[in-house]
Length: 160
Image 1 (cartoon, rainbow, N blue to C red):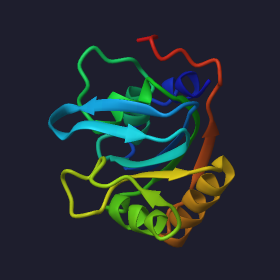
Image 2 (image 1 turned 90 degrees about the vertical axis):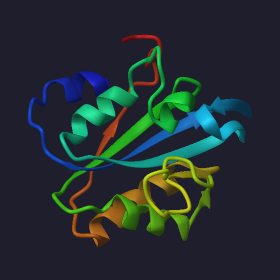
Image 3 (image 1 turned 120 degrees about the horizontal axis):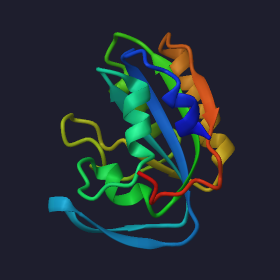
Image 4 (image 1 turned 180 degrees about the vertical axis):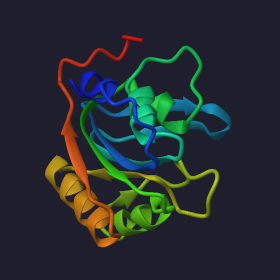
């Protein structure tokens, strides 16, 4: 399981990540001040960064939360994570990677991008493989080695 693999890493490398997950049905979610948003079933890729430890940030997204903090926290527990693609870098590559994915996939406007000028950091596709390929290619093109890690489909979103 991804969380177990990442738990072994005590290093605090900064970097970027793409968390790919699946929604099996259409959902409506209330997200903080944004209000209600509709999400189609399908595959999603969320682009983020962890300046004080990218592995810790991914682990956090995979845990259940009593109080959501990031936009993704409101949505993640409704889906099944499939892959985390992690890249260690000191550079701020989150937005350039989001721009790359925006040229290929439907962007969810303003999702995950409240602290930047990007259109959004969440992308929808009918295909998991297309999202994974594009994320790896995008990281590689930005000079960041991408490490895809598969997530166990038996993941329990209520486990803290």
